[in-house]
Amino acid sequence: MKWRVVLEQDPETGDWAVWVPELPGCASAGRTEEEAMENIREAIELYLRPDPIIVAPGAIIREIAA
Image 1 (cartoon, one colour):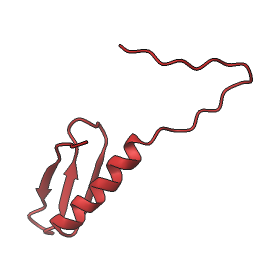
Image 2 (cartoon, rainbow, N blue to C red; image 1 turned 30 degrees about the horizontal axis):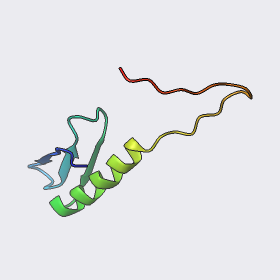
Image 3 (cartoon, one colour; image 1 turned 45 degrees about the vertical axis):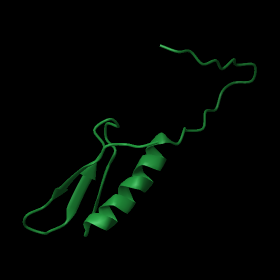
Image 4 (cartoon, one colour; image 1 turned 60 degrees about the vertical axis):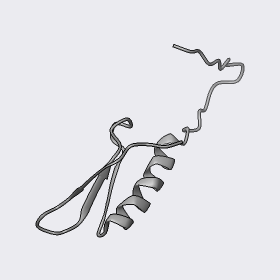
């Protein structure tokens, strides 16, 4: 899957910030543009990884489309 990312270079430090508009709060940074891109790939993977759900015995889990 492909995601749009926005890269912004800090004019004072030269570091790069990167974020994903479609994934609120999914952001990263790096000293170089390449490092920032590597870091945002990892951030996207972690963002999309489902959290484990602990439910009571006998609980029913279903999915719905909205």
